[in-house]
Length: 540
Image (tube, one colour):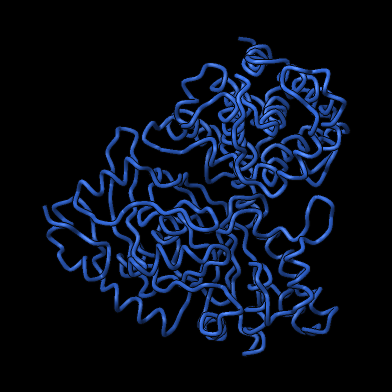
């Protein structure tokens, strides 16, 4: 059998790839890379899976169709092993694998990721290259998939994280965090000629453009106070005709690389496909596996021009429409369902999200959270139907047995998500009805998250919590509570449920704090109590 390598040299044997059923770029990858390096138009921060498959795929489509002759410059802000282990050895190529519900796959090599750079201010060559790129007048947009926590500057106590405070104190020349790095590079662009730019969050969170803008302006404001930058830089960042922060909504389930996909690719003859685990615990492979459905809706505000994204299937629209689509998805039709399945899946011993949809209670739970409790306060965005969207999620996307997505992965950083995924609907209920007492499934999901934080499953066995910046703080608050001993509960949840920094509001003021406490108490009664509680509240 012919052995194929995912490298520029390896792609020269086109027949072998064709016989393996893997599509190759029709364009000259090297030429595109050279043109992009010489005159970059699009820089992306966050070099992980959804970027490589979805955003990289958009650029790949535009190049394939002849409407663009530039790729994307990739910048990693957090896990530099990704550049060294996944980009460089494979000449920045990625093998995209689309997983279909019938078990078949579409396989395609994406060649649009033209350069991979580490956002390291202490590495002169990397940092100087970034400064060179940001000083180029032709740069049109920078985009982000760095997760919600990438924009966070402060902890639940309202104080800057220590690493953020260090970046504030050290100024633009010695920053380490994503927001400080971007702010420093925008300062370079400002000094080079006040060139315009679109700064586009493509992260999966409510009002993502606003979060990004607030973080950048906060960092710049702190630097101004310390004399690192002047008021004119603040004015540049604040002028939407100069620096715009378009809002967006992104949706494509991109789970961690599956062993089954790795085996399939190696069976096809592709070498060196095994995933790696980096020093920062990123689980990543030379391939990306993902579902087929994908949505990207972007506010069309690009002061320096932009690629013709609509020709790759992106919805280009106004902010109100983006906000409505994003709110529909993040707070009602997908993300809240995922989070509920994640925390309960961990507690009930599931290792595959798709399997949870065969569970009578969990399937009922997501139906109640989305179509039942979410729909009364969802806004129809016009360009997409909320009913069709949530039905596709529940009936097609989440149950796809060939999507190797795990509750453990989705449970990551839940403390950073619950305020968006449940808090917005809770606030909408308070606004519409005066309180949120009509809700049952959403309080049950929140109780499930609190129960999950005890790190004991429904059979009484300990399990490992997924990573989350608030785990030390939250587990400390819950210390002393023992599953099987409800008398150990002394009201510890009150500190969490009343924390508006977590949920966006005080859940007691919303009228559901006590109810969540009651549900939680029922879930810690002993082995099987979680299942019993789900049955009770879902009337089964």
